Image (tube, rainbow, N blue to C red; front, side, top):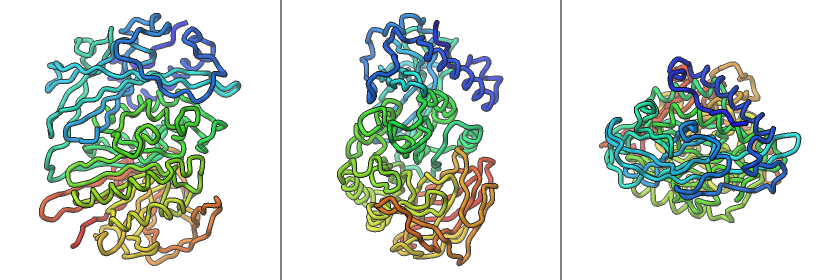
Length: 521
């Protein structure tokens, strides 16, 4: 029995809302999993009980199709789940990624300066990801991801692209609706916006947040980990409950934004998928094509940096330093931290602002509270290099600190205020309200979309110790809290008086918090 196509027919998609598309795909992919459970792909070697740890296997662009592929005409294997990422240089490099239901021949991207002249053709890399079955929990599954590297692009230029393979040509009129576009970073942007959140999953609220952030016109988006929740347990162990097909739904959900906005992800605890080597990150390497300028792109694909305009961005993998969830604690043997120290120094010299994002919270008071491993290992480096903004996820709320210096309030930062990291300390933002079920705060701010601004109040909370124990804290740095779905929008300005204007927005576009970062003013 053939596996059904997981895409939505173009004419039908134009008549459906995002929520209706989500339900359509959920139904189709549930059927797909049932077919796989029945052994529909047994001929392709997808047998339950295979040895765990099989990561992606790249195939050359012209490789012969697998036995499963020969049963499908190319035109039936419609690409889906397109998502962009910058290379190390956002002015000249873009990475285009997508998914197909089964292996295909000769995958490629067509690129041009108008939707009707996709003349340049770039071959793509096919990475197949095998997930072994677990009796009573999940069937074995193969997934197929494709990636094309576009280099030598012009800064500040809009490009149009279409993805295809043998039997599916985006240049054909019948597939013209699949053409998308992106814009490279300008050489000297005076002003731009980027967005950020963590802890998304596949939910109607995740869709609503995607739609809201797209309305901000971001140059790129930062995802602070816990991307899909295919691993519903989040301990980084092979005993975790895991459904790899959830990624098919997630990438389709995200495509409406990520097909045009570079989607820069890092690694959360739910992204440690222990069935893939190394370190449980083989799945991330198969699905994403991120900058490879971190300390080790193979072992830590979520660690990298890039510069856009006057802002340097650093992505980190906090699983390496987390005391709370220690499955990968210390896996880099200090190499990530040494790289971070060097990279922050380099960015401090060449950019106006440095923004760091990762998953586990340095300072938060909600369910997971603060991770002592992050504080012990990285917070001193953030202070040393006067980082301008730190963005975390992990706690499914919005929470923003005052400027923190030496572990305490360096300067109060009320809503609408301005802060100077060279004098006051660093503001830490938890932006974990992307779509997954929300958390509450322990002292009265409930899961009811309530906002609370603190004024000289102390909060009872805790942080995780190396012994994986909770150590109680009484703190005064928790300034703004919000328990509804939300995301972060950051406007960067260059020129004679550079600044970052940081806003927290609800999924309906309401601004619930804002503050400015200015250096040396």
